[in-house]
Length: 452
Image (cartoon, rainbow, N blue to C red; front, side, top):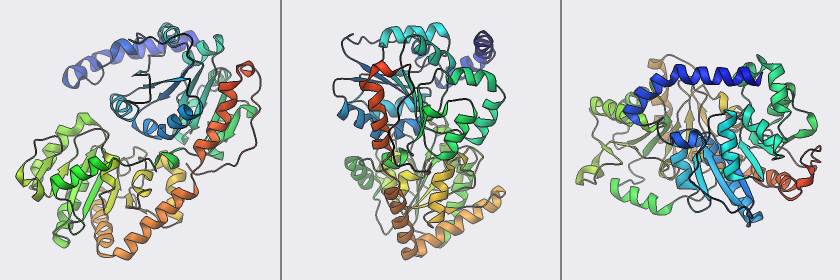
């Protein structure tokens, strides 16, 4: 099965190579870090310093890793942390978030045995921690052969992913046999990975560290800079549309145009999820007739009067949310699965999201149950535009409701924090007692949470 997996991985790579080349020439998205993806890391770590390798797929996992990285360095100051990402955007965010904490930040290798071996020879990690759930067969197998423990941290398995894994159930059972432990977000996530074949004594529910990452310190200098440049003030309410995807910007811009008839002083800041789409969204704003400005552009005197701002930067959205009266979180009108509602929620901002939040089911459920978020119904684009306009208009007009929503959202975040501490407690046994690598992990009795 491993040979077949390698062949399919290689075949897929070759089939997609022409597309990657064309796309790389346009955006440099895939050519970036190619040597690192082939296992060549330009770093050297002294052999007497233990290394913890944390893998984050993209932006969401990278942001979620913030409190865990700090906790690990506080608890294991003699260890070096190295962090990998799969996506270019995730890499950019990681280089900002962990520039003072990580010894190295690099692209995750393509999961061929030889590329994985190359990376392991360079890093000699004491442990590999995989944020959420990316089950790479060769990585896990090569680590097992070298007696390097691998743990899934803040693990989650969506219904869609679970169905895919079940198609290769016997292979996944073999792959999971190489996994040392899985620290899952919720009971449902734990049940799914158990059904996939991981032994029950290697599974623990520790909760969702995203509740802890949501309270990360805001960059006040950045907030002040943005406030002053664009003259952002409470009497000109700012609506932030964060992590938007294709087609969502059209809905958001039209909804904002309609909103301005009711709230003429309202302003919009729109932050596309993927940097390669900045130019596309800029074109939409240009066609909209709105007076708009780019965050990346040179400061101009009329920035203070612009109706809309394009946040064409990476790593600044968290700070921008603190300036918002209302935040719409994207990836949710289109069937992408949603993005993290907790970043604006933890700041007490009234949050609106679309119907497609499958990647954050329990988080959305916890907020909805406490009337701490407004979730739009699933509807055609024209109806969604009308609904978004109506909801945001009502929230701007009804300050007590808006403030109460924010208070409830902060309370939900406060009540669900603590997953980082529980995760660290379990990882201590992994990092301090290397003699138990091939034995069943004696998990301590811990409080659990089901919010995801």
